[in-house]
Length: 156
Image (tube, rainbow, N blue to C red; front, side, top):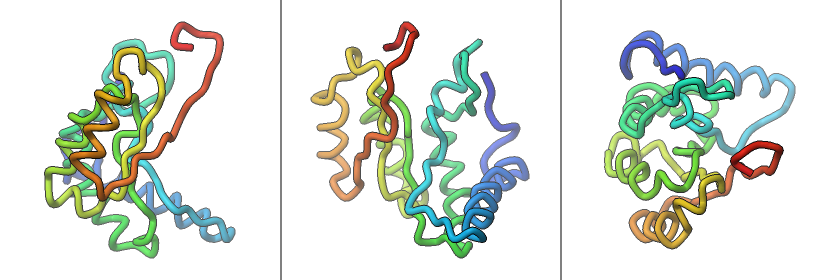
């Protein structure tokens, strides 16, 4: 379990946003470019005690504020301003709530291009209750499956 110290706009959040830019800078030195980045992989997992994987937690509100105050401006003011920004990058069951929180905020929404979704827990959040209403609310943002796997654990 873990989140960034402080709040959006502070030195920790600015440092994390600048890390994204530095990451893109370093790859660009080797002629490797990216078309998009996600604001965080599985941000809800970082809010769960004893989660078995490394992760950084964000609520939808925290991600919104981080994008509006830190990550969005950092990317926009860098040489990577054309890199697309994807929100959520987590299980579909967070939709449409997560998209509403982030995309109904004009400042955050101006930096966002799409919504990343995972297929885990689909038995709780089927497409008709998650993806369909999200697309209807925000038709100008792409919805992209960003992760799916099957393994030897209870969430297979």
